Image (spheres, rainbow, N blue to C red):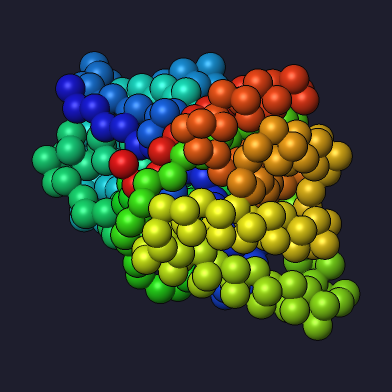
Length: 313
Ligand code: PMV
């Protein structure tokens, strides 16, 4: 029996603009995890996706099934043939679905790793990431590749579409709260809406994307070189600026704005939506001193779940 797991993820800054070639920063969230276990089965290949209550044979999977694609691509990558194999893959996850925490990428990453280990051919992070990228295309349409990258590498990254990720060296660890609006929001839908809006008003949207890109470069340099005080105060302002730009792109919603404002009013140094938007999660930058008050304010403002994580620890 082989088991592998993969963390959730959150985008610190740069979502949406990253689809158009701007950089973005993303960090793993180890407080939520996907796990895959592979064990021999008497016959056939079985997918037991407990996270979505579905158990089926690989040969019965829909052509658009990302788990089936992940299995097929792993065999292809290893130059092996599925018909000679009989095994069961069990998947479990504590990562909420369709909320910007990378659940699809994490489940597929855990699956590819566990299967490769079962086949006695462990894969490198770039190999896992490129297989999972193909499954992300089924889920997201035109993904930038940031989700599969941060989840497969399992470390904070500076990411630009089509380029190898650059690991972020976090000089001063910082605390984030991740609060869920409880509104499921498939990334494919908001990415499609931003694309339609960009096609209508290319100059305006490219201006917004470029401003996001500047924020990302500044945030990276603060995270890698700033003092503790400067890291939290400047990073907070940059997150606030990024939220405004995401609002102008049309991907926020009343529930996200309410949580963002509640966090700031309770002492967060910055707050923004994270991921596709229109629901899903937001992020608040806090200190150990303000964390409890901001968490309570988020819960009072309607957050369905609040997860705390420390980046760079
Ligand atoms: O999976 P999410 O909701 O965190 O969004 C991914 C980030 C986007 O920039 C919105 C899409 C992408 O492919 O980069």
